[in-house]
Length: 164
Image (cartoon, rainbow, N blue to C red; front, side):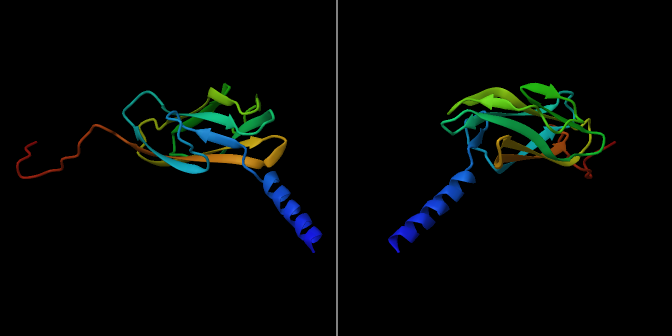
């Protein structure tokens, strides 16, 4: 009986180690944002695209090949999203080339997500997935929800005191 319990325990533990998450995503303030949704407000009057950067961490004692894919790109019409994963990719590319991350190492400055609403107002959602190319079950995600509005313009409405 003890032998059976030991075998079942070992199988259970190995099943969880196979599904373990070994890729961690940290924002630029070093907050763990793995598998979270980040909300951002984008100024539609700006000519510069909104940029969101991540540091990617290998939490294993082995080097791993990590790839990045844009798995959701639900953006406003006439707007644009693109990303860099070591190199920058055009807005029509959803899958980057993999990068090897050494054991317990952090890749700093290799991932940047860009969004330009081109003066469009509304909500856009972009989701990125980082995955171990040798074990595609080992994935980490981040979803970025972008609210595009003209920041800095106060809507005071019309009143009896307003004269045109």
